[in-house]
Image (cartoon, rainbow, N blue to C red; front, side, top):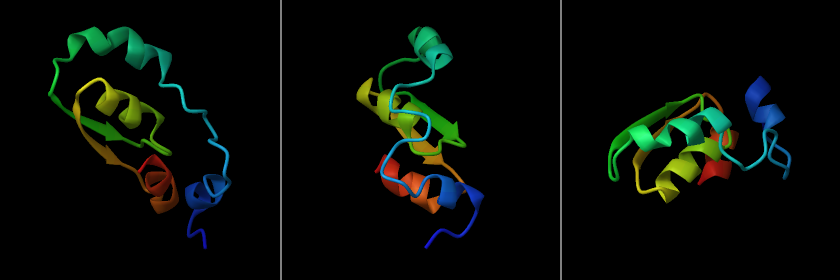
Length: 73
């Protein structure tokens, strides 16, 4: 059962902000090196952290919503 606003917001099967990474992140990704540690605060359902991991980054995703983080997994 959702515990907070964001848990409730992310509790549907849909992805609230979609699954594509933020355009600014993609634009700036060339600044990161393969295997670099990356902290992604407020990651919600994981659209940015999942994309970064797919690019070979070592990602730590943090969010106040356990529901969002579970979807990212």
